[in-house]
Image (cartoon, rainbow, N blue to C red; front, side):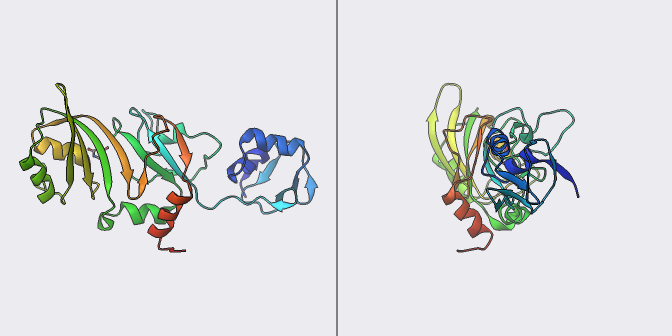
Length: 246
Ligand code: URA
């Protein structure tokens, strides 16, 4: 069985930061196989069930769900030779080896990205058949909003390659001399979909940010690059997506 540092194991269980984990160990509150261990670097068995804090087994959480405000410049992948990935932004407080981004945003797209190790959730939300709503803030140049254009989005824009997109709800936020700010709600996730939809109307996306994914909305207190665990309400949505109505 793989070995892991004791302080790291405790951190990965979810309730303690690395500093707090070290403190617990120094306070002699952590036992391994019934024996107090005061060395934070002690190598414990991963998934060990005999590690206790104050006599209570420290069992790692099975699934982790993180909301990340993805900044531009990092890619939605688990590793890459050229670029930093979204996982490089995640600190040891929540990092685990099996974390992956549930879905993809382009390198220059910002906003809501969920990182998890829950493959069922990823399947239940990313499969094209599931029609999960995604809302984007779009800044487009060379695009003029009109009622006709809004209707075309609603009826299904034809993008390059001849694919007719599912109906999408377009809303004008503002027209500035440099760009048109729009909100666009789509239920698909084709490669570069928003950019291609805007291109089909003659425009060019110069800024793109995902604001929501299903019932999960980007926490605007997270600056680009910051993340947090999903809260109870957001977790309820995950449970429902996974078919657990409790
Ligand atoms: N549509 C795009 O064009 N890019 C993204 O990153 C997400 C949706």
